[in-house]
Length: 106
Ligand SMILES: [Zn+2]
Image (cartoon, rainbow, N blue to C red; front, side, top):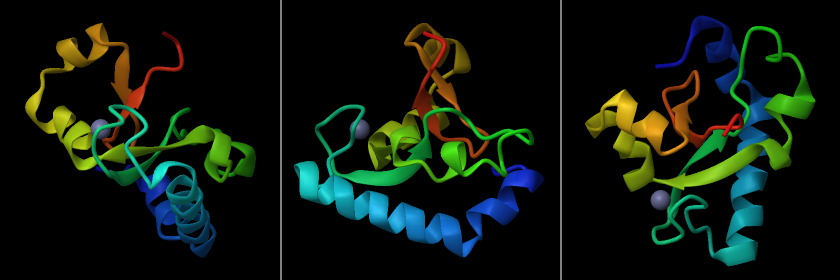
């Protein structure tokens, strides 16, 4: 569930264009596979460093392909069916959009 400050960002044309070009890049690299499990096709474009009210206006965080990863539906769904403690133990975390990411603080 996106927080209010991020909602406007996720609706922006800048993000939609960025997301689209990131997916095109991933498809040209490995056919658009999930960057976490590498087994399934990507489904969600996720911010590695999670968005906060402090960085939401910083395009080097929000629109930087180096801060994005492509996750499969399966990896995205892990958050829905797993307990948070399991996620944390695996060195994972959820971003403000409720998406599963590799913890940058691992
Ligand atoms: Zn996956």
